[in-house]
Length: 450
Ligand SMILES: [Zn+2]
Image (cartoon, rainbow, N blue to C red; front, side, top):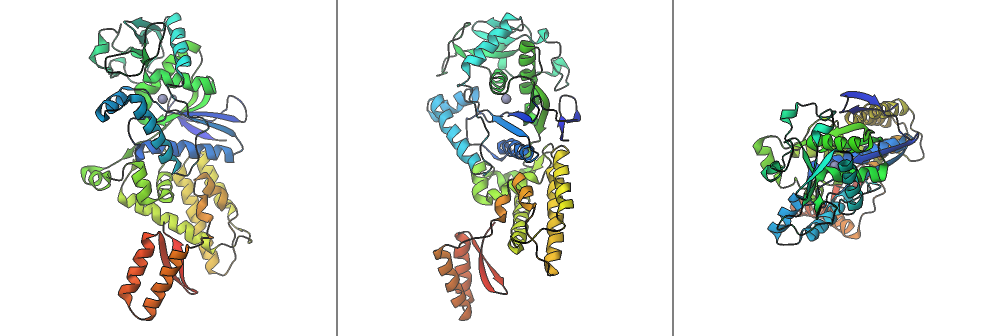
């Protein structure tokens, strides 16, 4: 049985799929107004790996991650950059895909865009107007919060603390300050708009997700995910829209990941320049970055620092070193209790740090056995690493490139001539190419640096 913490009930609840054997997951994706940072990458990693785990358990999982490609932030950024908002959103979407591709975890099954879902959005808004849950006002459309008695049940806060953050312009048009926009009439300086029965304009942020999720997964689907910063107002409003229009829950479990934190000003300064995902990937490598993400429980905040990345890189190296000692043809006697612990931890609210601990306990035990002269194979290590997105660490057949081989020979020649300065210089050149030199009883070997 797989159990997941549900923000709506505050409990860790069994995952009971609507359609037996299938799990539909919708996770809120980026608003494409700039390059994404490590914090934006966390839900991408969490839900991609959660899907892998479900597949490992024999479930047919479908992951939907949307792209919000029309939004105030996009208009503002496009204006600052002096380009059209469609062009900016298009470029940033390409960057987002490239940057997340580099995580090496594959793509979500579906990646709908807001601008590609306008018809479904307009239809959903019309249904809300027809049923008295929404009203048009000077080309805008607002959700009537007072019409939905369950409003606030996700974020559990008193009505007076619910600020929609929609500015003063909207305030005059709203029946009540808690109401929120479903549609916004086109304003001066906004270069994209669509026709709708109540006027030309564009969708609000919250309605996009209700429409995209329903179009692909239907309602009452299994898991709705996203960062904990989206609980209010975004997810509260998604619930209100869909439940008011369809009289059915939007999702069965609300799964929220904690934030990535830059703690303290000093730390923010030292890692600020590698907080963008593509820069972090370049600097730390995808293996260390993925290892970093799985080191924390998805619900907890995760501190981002050079130390945390270094620690992750060392963990990657430990796995690689162990993998190099394995014999593909040998059995993995003794691994099963560790594998059971690993998968039980993931079934218990997707506890990746506990799973990771089981993995490293096996590596310690395995190394002891290897030291004692036993032969060991990978066994279920491959499955465990695959679920964490790190099964590539088992590929130890590393063909060095000719350039690296030449440098290694030159290093050895320099060492033989006791010219250690030259030998160190060759080692630095190798490091720049991504190779470490490891001195082994069989002579020096080239290994990919972590
Ligand atoms: Zn969303």
